[in-house]
Length: 102
Ligand code: TYC
Image (cartoon, rainbow, N blue to C red):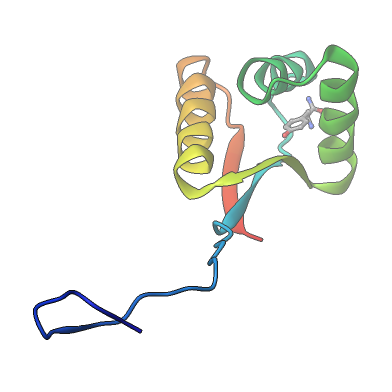
């Protein structure tokens, strides 16, 4: 507790409150039509993966149906999803990208 000096009670927190942001996974979904090379390009361009990392993730998605591109705060995750969906649409690929709360 504390006092502002004017007789008004003011409650202040003394314990350092470190709050962790909610985190979201960004996922790519497999489909039968998007070229493998395009998915690798997406992972390099929007998720800063190396060619080897991107290839591993793409093959994981191809084989398992879904895979993680990265984990971000809400606003960053939302931006990544929008960028990938816009880029896929521009190139007429059905690639789907979604986010889910961790
Ligand atoms: N299954 C696609 C193909 O055989 C490749 C692919 C991989 C598509 C990952 C989407 O998220 C994806 N061309």
